[in-house]
Image (tube, rainbow, N blue to C red; front, side):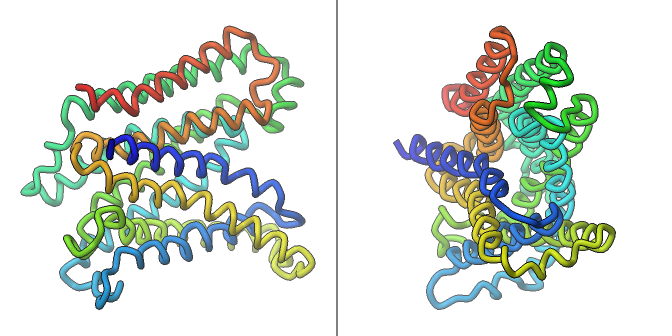
Length: 344
């Protein structure tokens, strides 16, 4: 029963993440770079910091975790957060050219597979004595393969969509639709985004051990990863503010109330996925396979819900029944991938 609860919590977080781009559509009179960094203040700084505080037991402080003994893991966690930040930037571009459904499917699918594998592999380079490669069991590899299979099927549906619709129909669904360019960007975004899980692997010891509730143990590492990602995004967004002369966005006091509200909501929905991941893992401790696969499961469910939003937003409107059938098969395979390893 605990495993079902854990997976449901992760699923709720995935649904929230897949919904985070909806409130962004309500932001007024700000350029992309301005609202992106403002929502990032909530998504990557304020909320992760508050989440990390939940991992601190009574009588202790968060600062106690950041000691010289942990300095290597801390800096590696932040470093992979910086790399993940690149993935976050290109992630938005993938949806610009492919739409919410297809863009998230390819980017998150790549992120799910590579993120799950890269974590133990890179950790093994620095800490072979911990034998991290032992976590990559047959069941884990099978789960990753089935996830990638589901992503591939959805990718086929996307290709069928690109080939069947006229240019006018493509633009009606996704204004800047460009499958070749979007595919390349989505693959890059997925590869770099996979660094998030690598950061979590390096930071998994940054907590108070048995004094920290299992549901909150990954939250300090999550904060360090998002901190690194915030640095990357801030540099790029401020560069764009300077290049495009959009510093004036921050002076538009008439829209601050509205924009701050929806940026905060978008940031909260985005952070929910990793808050839910931490809570969910607290219920999966009896299954080492699902603990290792939890990041992959989160990304797979993100894809499922992003395609639900894609259908709601009519991004698949005008496609043939065959294309929709292939899409649905891909979604079903992804759902199966979340539970299959538990039965191996």
